[in-house]
Length: 298
Image (cartoon, rainbow, N blue to C red):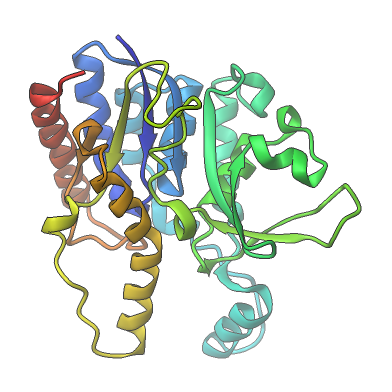
């Protein structure tokens, strides 16, 4: 059965999606259109490129995600350089290694630009801080004078994954001559779980079933944030921005089409997670997806 899929953001917690995809494939489901935010955009792009769950498992299992923390070289003492880079470059890490890795693995499947994919089958969410709005890639690239089909899929995913202050924002230059470069960051700021992506006109009107994969419990099961200092307050602030709107939207009618994968004890930016934790995330994804399909009424 062909369906559409939407994958939420969640950093390294996205290992859970591998288990979810394993079950979907075993049950005979294939994705026609896919979309996602941040880490969810990585999974969406790789699925649309043709990667199956077993390939993703081996690809991500041997990946040392800690290597994506690519700091700029500096002769200034580390602690001072870190804050200078954050101040002037707006992020601790460049994000180039992430983009290069994406470019290589997509190219292995013959995918470089959006023109290499069927039109409208991959949609990625990012946030334009300069204009103060959410953008859907590649659709909204026309507003910047860019040709959607010629735009790099790896670059689009990199934009969606630009966690504020962690990765440097991506500059998107406006070729229409209106305004300067826009600073593009993580799509999770404005829509971490874009379940609305494939609606066709009317409210709740879809061409085919849409299944969402969310890396949090249902809203009634989410524990309150513990705020003890400025750092924990910022963490709570970011998590609230990236999920509150989407969770309220979900509560208004789409929960029956969503696989809720309740990952609560892994941080999105914990790039040093152990192999044991990876396996637990994959198992959790399998279990929750299997339970969902047993109860799902299309």
